[in-house]
Every structure is written in C-alpha cells, then in structure tokens.
Length: 55
Image (cartoon, rainbow, N blue to C red; front, side, top):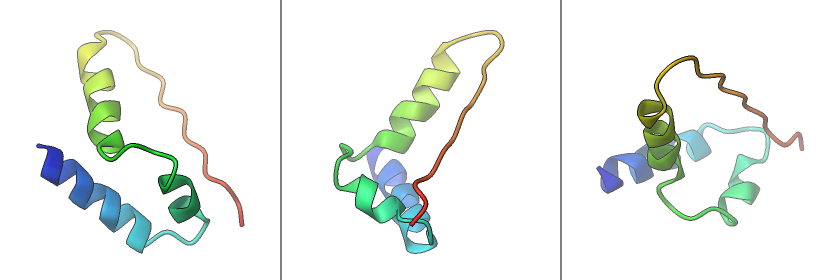
C-alpha cells in the first residue's frame, strides 16, 4: 500500500499549480495513506478540511 500512496502523491504534485511541491519537501512520504487511514479508523461524522498554499 505504501507504493500506491507514493504514486498518488506523485500524481498530485505533477498536476499541481499552487505550490504543493514546495510543501512536499517537509512531509514524510506516505502522507496520503496516513490521511486515508485516519479517516477510515475514525467512525462517525468526519469533516475533511483542505487548504493549499497560493503561489
């Protein structure tokens, strides 16, 4: 599953136009997998907040 997460992260960065690639250097690989696991493991109502740096 780790490889899938890193492939997804690569795709996100390839198509990003708002500077996400600059933040990626500060994140440990597998951040998409960890976010998905957090959502999966917490039953009930989940609020997903997103935000992107604006170049």
